[in-house]
Amino acid sequence: MKLQNRFFAYIILLVVYYFSTILLMTLDSELKINHLFITLGFGFTIINLVYSFLILKWTPLFNIVYSIIIAAVSLALALKFGDLHLFSNYDPYDIETCIIANAVFSVVFWEVAYQTKKI
Image (cartoon, rainbow, N blue to C red):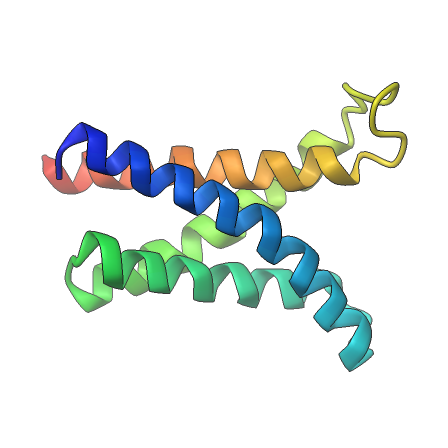
């Protein structure tokens, strides 16, 4: 895949991650699951699966494994990044920081996956 196409796909993925986080949090409160991490984890895994099957078009096993790993690791790192309280003046509860960090970590990990697949 060309660099411009990957860049465009990553921008779309950032926007989808950002807006889907709000929808997934709303879904969690409507379903009264009270386990936001489970809802977000499954939601991000589904987004990653759609991304990998439609955009990357790798083998199904590779798509599924990387989608699950990237969703789990990026969500865990985003929560740890939010605990750093780097932008407390602008985001008092660090929610926006976690949302943006999750999207950025996902894009970085998808690029790492792309580079490993290319080798």
